[in-house]
Image (cartoon, rainbow, N blue to C red; front, side, top):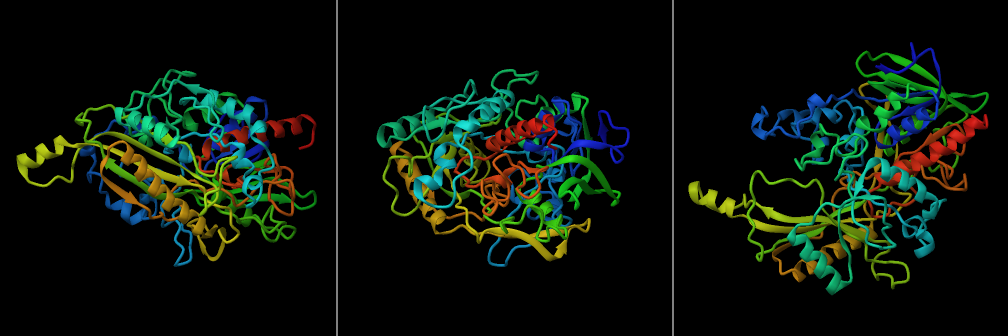
Length: 564
């Protein structure tokens, strides 16, 4: 436990309890504590010291050379995430202790971390704004619902977050992907510049360098990236954004924030006489003892599915179906970007060879959405759109034939690769949802989730189109040996879960109001991806952080007016 001011956090009355210390929880703690409120920040996992970071450790120093049997035994689900390896698997949840269920014919992979910082410690760092094409998508194509706020209302919060986090990128002037407050962009490779040129000239499409939360110049005491590459294993220079090195550190420095680690929140506690949240109950991860923390307001930032699980498990006689569920929509409209389709090939015109000591740029390229734009004819097979992420660079040819010296020579000869992978919008559907499993519990006795999600015909058609357009763009560069994949990955593989506690103006059609406050309980907020009304095709974390700052500013104003 780290305490900046409280002698015994279980006997104090805090102003705000924030559940979850990741991208959104860190921002909530920072904004509120720096404004003078007394905040308790609860994290289900432990602190991770920079001494544990392994971004510079070669594979030969690992006991099992990246093939630890512990991954298969205790992390059979988590190991599907590219970031869960022998280097850091203990940052991820133990699947045996943290179960969830799915229908047999509807698999869903849920990747989770329980450490201070949560998934901000391993995220892909791609940071894109939503536009009104996303926020007002229903007005554009008639499907679903609009968000209860516009892009214009989010702009000052996007600006504020980007200036603090440090987003490197390049302005492109495309309304469907608004430009932001950028640090200098990372450089494209020669293959990427070729694809950018051909995509623009032949197809009228815009390829840009990834907009990434990685510094290209010093910012607030954090050093510029030195291109070592594996950011998911930590960063001793704090060059990529993670909450422990930034927002959480700021909150603790304020003197107004108390951090409780190994605190697995089971439910929000309610005062039935006033219909107000009065704190949370948690189970200590190691002691297996139950504790209560009292506060005037509660903010859930535990991650979309986990926050929704807490709301369900907080059911009372006044809220028998879970907190905030008078609409019956809690858990409904689960979304995760559809991925899996794309194309890859080789560029024979480039003879640059790969070296083991090459710098590893922690970023890729981004093809801005070009389907179903405002003012353009709708695609005949699907609504909404997709973008591409990818890259181009020299690569070793480890699949070369031969043995001994000839094999080594062929591997080093290598090839110049190029690839595009689609990220498409997942439509909000009532039949994609989560609920409490009536029988399954985790290792701490807390009821577990049952998750049901599939990608529908719209997503499947979108991925088929993404595979075709990726291939045609690679062909325009002169790429050879193009391999096309039109298959759709299992839901959850994008690790962009959103929805399940959507915001809206109408309490009968939403769980949260436009400021992320529960319609049914005005001192209970949810500011992670739960609140999303639609998913867009852009990575969601930047928007989640902007929404959190906006919600906290509004909550502060309510504190000033003595409304909380």
